[in-house]
Length: 275
Image 1 (cartoon, rainbow, N blue to C red):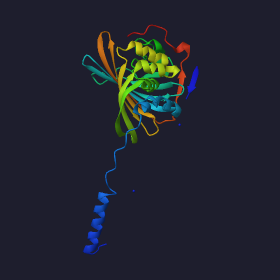
Image 2 (tube, rainbow, N blue to C red):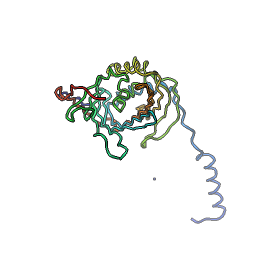
Image 3 (cartoon, helix red, strand yellow):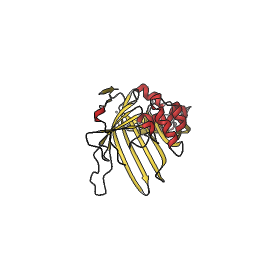
Image 4 (cartoon, rainbow, N blue to C red):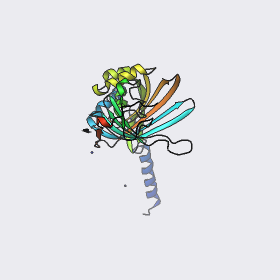
């Protein structure tokens, strides 16, 4: 077993007029509407450097949502967990959508994210409930940007290293935190070349597997430059059908301890996984 670890008088008429005059003057001068915040001098640089800032922050809690649309059908998979941006490891629990009758179709899936590999428990598809499935993410056509039902938070940040045509949208508030909103496209191939070594292989696989290298994104950075939210929009072909995927990652609770315990070899399912 391998353990990886990432903490608000009454007066005379003349006096009333004087007070009124003072208030009017204040409204014209000191109470004027504040100027809009100036855009950052280098929007692209801020976005491209987000992954390095997260590595310095260490770790965080994470929430994910992946919405997929194909052939008129739309489903959303949600996840909760944490990620260590130094070790590039994380743990998520994914909840799959309910069936048409409102009943749960599948037990929550536990995912362990590690450099080059994804471990899944309660995968279903013929896998025993007490077994894990190990997937080589460097061999996946999407590099696990989509396959796992949640984009690896580390990969989501590293993908921004390939940001281009970045524009500053403005300031907004996210969960009580003031953030700067950026929009642009990320080049998967360029990101793969610049990514941290642990995630380079998976992104390189995605650069080869996706029909287009260009991935539109919206990124939100706080005052410290930490990525708080990112939404990527992927498009790929699955058995001849175009599939549109919107993947959103929220990061918060920076410094939270994230512990990832890898399963023993005997607990990894070696049989065929049904599609």
